[in-house]
Image (tube, rainbow, N blue to C red):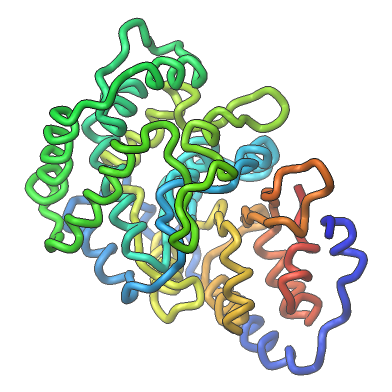
Length: 380
């Protein structure tokens, strides 16, 4: 069913939504202190401050039926032109999942980012990326370390994303490079930063890193333990996909975008958390922290998590958590819709935008209570 058709069939909500609307409305009315009286977000977190946020804001490890090493949303760049028009730099970015977050972050250049995922495995993937960003001087150095392949000659700062991947597809993965880089990653996390990672955590980091070593630019999403199907986009495909208008927004598309991520990671300002979006701690803790610093959410990338929240009957709790976040008029949801929003001949995944405050307002008014309603509330 297309997005226009979803809007056409959305129905008025039932009286049972009144209690939820009242709870969300009350949360919205709990105003934060005036921003001028609060200390701003830090320009840098110490390692101890960073790890304290990771530990204290996180919830117990949960389950999801994929490894989440690579996205399967091949249209994720299509909304970035509109996103950059609406969302100003300097806010706070919230997200979920692996590295597609980095392209959104590079596009809107936030002051700080929190990436919350139900799986601890995703936190470990983010820590792997953190170490690689910190150790890498530029995009080619980053991909060399990520894939454990020697840096190709002739790849300079003006290389296009196509040229980068063409060069690395010809390079051969080297076990010696993998061993050297794996040791450096763990040393960076455990010794340089002093993060408390047990043997299981180290194993999770190495699972992710070895997957990139084995899969290289062709690494794909895994769902339901069924293997890496060719129908899913590869890591390379996702970065080469562009916005459908001839522009590339990947964080690997230019050195300037790459440096935004490198700076944030070096300053400990991309904070990975374990948490359910409808959980009791993670999003609420982030909301409290942002309010303490007079900060506002700029963008919140959801993927298609809301679909599962509706299936589990906890989307209303998620909206209560959203109501606890400091929002502005331009705070924007980025969501993905699979199958039901695309028309014939379009990709199976469609990326969408939505006003966070607008969705809260309409939910409070009883106009939004199903996943279909949420999708109908969105736009491309």
